[in-house]
Amino acid sequence: MKRRTIFAAIMLLFLVTTLLCGCGGSKEKNPDPIGDPEPVGNDAAMDAAFGDLGISMTDADNIKIKYNSDKGVYEISFTHKSEDYIYQIDSLTAQVKDKSSSPSSNPQSEGDLTDSAALDIMFADAGASGVTVADMKDIKVKKTTENGEKVWLCSYSFDGKTTSYTISAVNGNILKKVTE
Image (cartoon, rainbow, N blue to C red; front, side, top):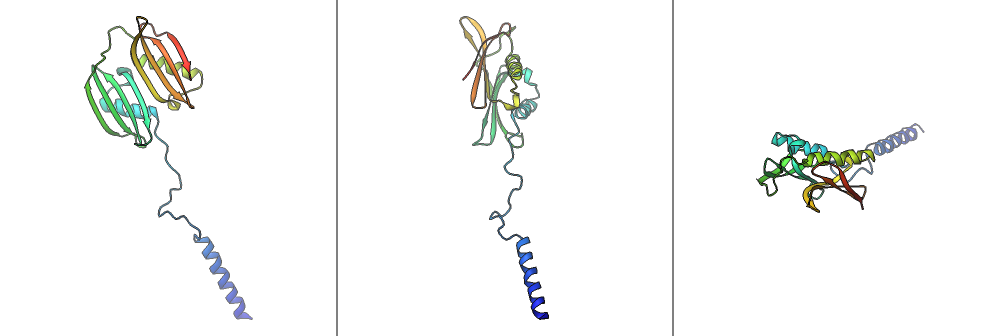
């Protein structure tokens, strides 16, 4: 009788140990308990690009930023002092992966509103609606002329919709805003 009790206790101990030691564990060699990390965001990516060049966002014009999830990078292009720059920023570390520059094809006119000022106007308007810069995707700004007036065309995507602005390059007024 004593042998049966000892045998049953050993079997119970073996069963409990087997269950507690990971039967049915993950098939991965090193499972990631946290999950996939999130991208660093537009702000951190722009800070990395401008910081690498030693300038602030207000010193840059024609800023465009796009998140490329296939490559795992933020693609940032902008103009500074008659040079066009293109940066690829790692989406997880905010480190510069690649950069290039070339002479600008669209230099800034003296006295015009800068594109960073136009972006600030767009950011302020979007912020009044509860959209933050960190929420925005595919931020774009481009200077052009419409009906003889110099304007900035600014846009961003958020929650599956694109919001576009036409902002006067002379006085900073929002001339048009469309969400599609």
